[in-house]
Length: 115
Length: 112
Image (cartoon, rainbow over all chains, first blue to last red; front, side, top):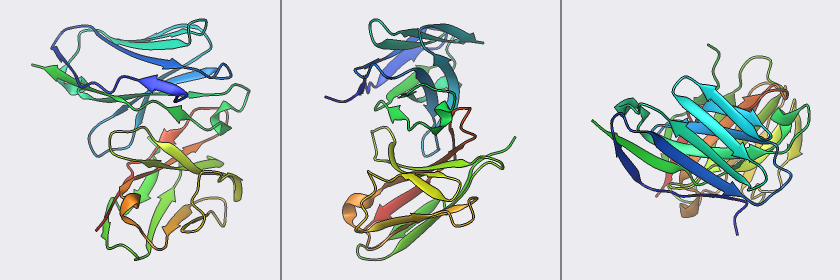
């Protein structure tokens, strides 16, 4: 069993819809949770990261972490064609120097927003 | 905005040949990572540097892969000899340690 599970999709939704992307994980040591967006043939681009449980909002994007269920989500409101990409969840352990912890990624969900 | 630089962006080689990839992290980032991303999968860590020292290379196939960061700034990842199964995107990322990792555009390797 992989440490991080993510539905690879593909997921297609009409423009303007709310998109929900999810990951589950098995390692209780994970404390930092990140979402990266990756356009075709490009490197991953950091969207958001959160520490421990709770919600974080940034514009049209909301990240949620439920550590009790080992479940994280990314919501995209008012989805746009430019949001079409692969979305990767990633996780790492805690500590002050969390940037020194290796990231464990999900497989990525391929999202297409239909105009 | 500062970015991680990688070159080349694309590389096509024949199996048994040697290939090398270069990464220049964001200025001031002491931690540097090399990841491999196979098509349809998430990136997997190959090697992590803290300044010029290797912190984690447990997933690096050391019989054919090598990595160095001699002056603690830019880094080179080498494969010799390349095999068909090495075809993938090779990603470099960097971090200050107190923040998350920022990725470069990657080098897409095709081994024929």
